[in-house]
Image (cartoon, rainbow, N blue to C red; front, side, top):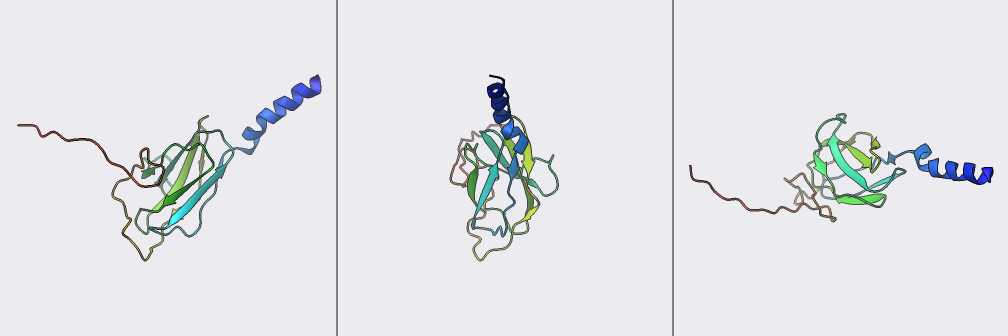
Length: 136
C-alpha cells in the first residue's frame, strides 16, 4: 500500500518536474505560417507575443486560449518586429521563448494593423462593435 501511495504521488508530480517549456521557432517570415509548440504545464494555455527582451511589457499580440500543445499562426506582423513568445498555463506558470525576429517575405498583403487575435482560431483578427456619435 505504501508503494502505491508513493507511486501515485510521484506520477502526479511529473508535470511539475518537467515544467512548462515553449520551443523557439526558426525562420519566422511575414505572411507565412509558423508553428508554435510547447510541452508541460496544464491546459488551458494563454499564448501572447511580448516585445523582445521585455517579459513584463504589454503583449503586442494575443492569441485565443489554447487547450492543445501547438498553434499555427500566419505571421501578420511586419518584418524586423522583435518578440518573445510568452506562454502561461492554468496554474500561472509562464515560459518564454528566445528572442525572435520576423524576417521580410515576398508577400506583405497579410500584414495586420490589429494586435488582438480575440476568439479567432485561424490566426486572423476579428473586429466587431458599433460607434455612436455624440453631439457636443
